[in-house]
Structure formats: C-alpha cells, structure tokens
Image (cartoon, rainbow, N blue to C red; front, side, top):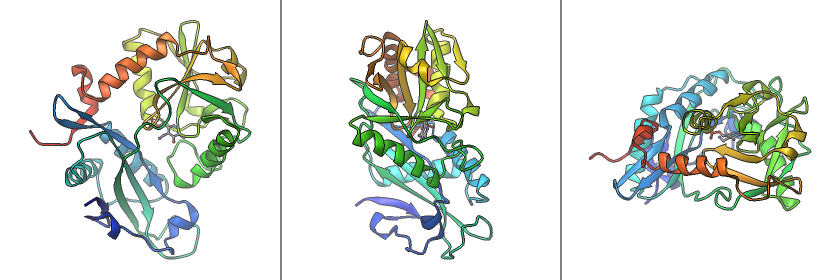
Length: 305
Ligand code: PMP
C-alpha cells in the first residue's frame, strides 16, 4: 500500500484527496518543493538530499504568501522520513511536499485562510538525459518578472510560465526551454538553473535575474569553487553568450546536472559533453548517493541503524 501525508496524518494515498472547491487549486496559490532521496546499496540506506534546505525554502516561500505552516522544517523532515519508511522505499525516489490553502472560498487572496501541507512520494527516475545531454531552445516566453509572480519562490501558479515554455520546446522537437527574463538576459530553464563555461570560468545568472534560488545551483557553485578550483561569476548573461559557450549545463533537484549539447540548433563546444560538466557530474552523483564522506552533511539517512 502507498501512503501520503495529508491533513496532519499519514494515510493511504487514495484517501489523500482535496475538494474541487479548494481555493489554491483555482488560483495557484500553493508553494511546493521537489526533494530527491538516493538509495545506497552498500550502506543499505536511503539518503534524502538537502532535506532541511528544501523545507526551509518551503517555509520561507509559504510566509511570502501569508501561509504560517504549523510545522518547523525539522518537523517536516521527520514526517518525510516516516513517510518514506512507511512506503518502504528502497530505491531512488522523488518527494513532493506542497503547502496550500484548504479553504473552499472563491476569492484570489492570501489572508484569512488555513494552510495545509501534503507530502507524497513519486517514482520519477531520470528527468532529463544526464548521460548523453539534451537539446534546448531559447523560449519565446519570458520568465516571470519579480514584480508580477516572483520566480524566486516556488509558487504553483508560476509554473504556467514553465509549462508554456516547456511545451513550446517539446512541440518544436527540443528537450527543454531556456527562458530569458523581461530584460532579455538569461534566466533559467523551465525547472532548472543554468551554467555556462567560458574560457575556464563558470558563469551563471545572479539572483537578480528573475530566477529560482536553486538549492542545486548553490551546491554546484560550491563544488566548482572547491573541487574544480574554478572562478564562478554570477552576473547578467546575454543570450548570445549561449552560442559561444564552451560548455552549458542545467542544475536542479529533478534535472541533477544535465549537460546541454545543443542550443538553438548550434552545437555547444564540439557537441559532446564537456570535461568540466563530466567532472562535476562525477562528484555530484557520488556525493548525493553518500559515496563521498565529506558531503554526507548534505544527506539525511531515512532508516535507523
Ligand atoms: N528553476 C526552476 C524554475 C525550478 O523549478 C527548479 C526546480 N526546483 C530549479 C530552478 C532548480 O532548483 P533546485 O536546485 O532547488 O531544485
């Protein structure tokens, strides 16, 4: 039997149902997270990656929508551990927590409502092709502006923007969309942050460029600096820089580290995964699975030993 966390309890997933009248369902006023957990066969252990960081972000984003959740980040980590154990997960898994207003009133507002948290597990597998890389298209859809629906927050309604861009890319035969912001500079993918490698330096749009404050992005910046001893520059990035980059990759919980081998029908570098992207992938995939001792601080073990 599969279970979910719903209205304060772990229940069979069939019982975790909301009404069609639910306010947040109509207006997209929910905040969510995506967390991965990796199974380590040798340790016989399931490791949640950056669990506390994801729940801290959920709580911060919820507050921005006037949602005071009745849980701390620590509570939510414990609840998630319990859910994973209850579902007897012994393989890689994706976890989707969502905070929403459960009220059945039809007004697009954020006050006077009661927030609720639901969590379920999902067998995502690989989201994008991390082993041979992907082809991307610069979208005709611009990323949400900070003064309309802030991309900084993981707000459900903002994902209409992602869905439009992703769909346009898929229908045109590409794997993913890269969005520019309202000023015409690079923002991010539909569900990933973006990095370019140029002349041995890593470049990524800064937080002011209307992007999500990605948790993988932050970890990757640290790895580039510490492990690959590279300079990382956070600044506005022009679209044209994509076409002259030596390497490009996307980062995200679902996307992990996905190499981009083609952008707008132009090969990135020689059209193969670049050496820096490869080295970074090697470290990242080992770190998240618990194979690198010094990065075990990123991980929360699920099973008691
Ligand atoms: N940008 C967007 C729009 C996303 O949806 C995601 C996925 N959460 C990311 C970036 C990457 O964020 P993270 O590394 O925290 O998963």
